[in-house]
Image (cartoon, rainbow, N blue to C red; front, side, top):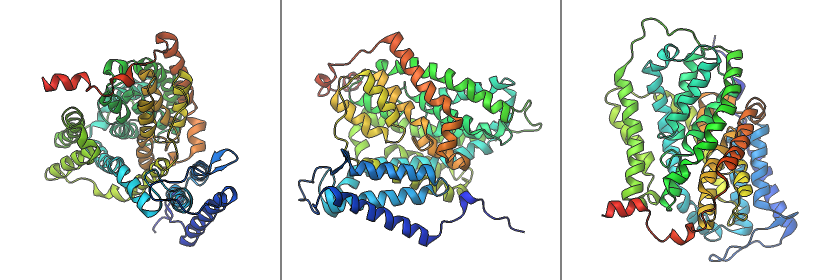
Length: 467
């Protein structure tokens, strides 16, 4: 007899979805109508944000979307798409977009954002296939032989994810970590430990200019990699703070397997495929940033490189295409949130200070960290090590706060609950704060006030390449 699909996988009634969309649309128009009678904007001069009780209506709609995701966690895709539609319709009717009003403004906005969205799409979909290659290589089955017994084994696994993320994309590091955890813990992974895997993948990339998109942006803008490296002072402390409690949670929930299964044979062809895909991503990132930085704004270089490697290696071993439908849903969910966030009227940040950097970490848990980083670089005056840590690690506090979190939640649907993530992953937020203040006490806040004077000068690495 066929088993019923779990609640989280049952399709939402179409009429219910339409009612949600209608409600959100009417709410957007009503909120706008309460504070302004304006219904149009010129194509070259969009109307300023409309405020309700001192808050831009755009933010109210975005907050309602995030609240809906938190409450209706079995229907996150429908809620995210409804929120995006409501925000877009509101801006079409009242305020316009950054680059213009009406459909023209929307088209120009999407033209500006499409590379980021395409890269995210390609990486989330591609790395889901990579994780299946890694799982079927049988390396995860061998992991118990190399990890310590008890909770220390769980902590060691988090440390491995942390190190991997220093040179891999955090999505890949999180999925590899999730795959290993599923095998070494017998398929029973605690939500608190899942939060820790995401935190390890984000923290590990925060101090490396090739470990995260935001740190790469800083490097391109002339920030020294040695300055970004300072983020590891905070990230290393945070790893200990969240890693030990998470490992203990996992040990109580399902202890690490004592021994690897007998007769396991590593499939080295799949190991080679994983290595080729990862190498393609790393090389595309480094070469494009050093040699062809303008290309990064024109096409999704890293995502295309990953898929080129996937398709080329498909001749050796067939990818597990069966994971694509569920991965596609999670990917569209994240793209809907990122697109909604990109429409928010965020043009300036508070004055650069450690308090602002600390706050940006919490903001990045619900807001895309790429535009936040771009605004900070434009503003200048930050200690870039602190900013790298804050925007890199902060998204770990909520499951949809980072692409790594969404990717791992696609693998473990039970993680798609803000309440459970916050309750069992409490150590992540605590680790973020403690790590930040330890770094502040050890290194102090050293504002880079000269950064804005250097932005017109190519980074030192560019001069070396030109020479």
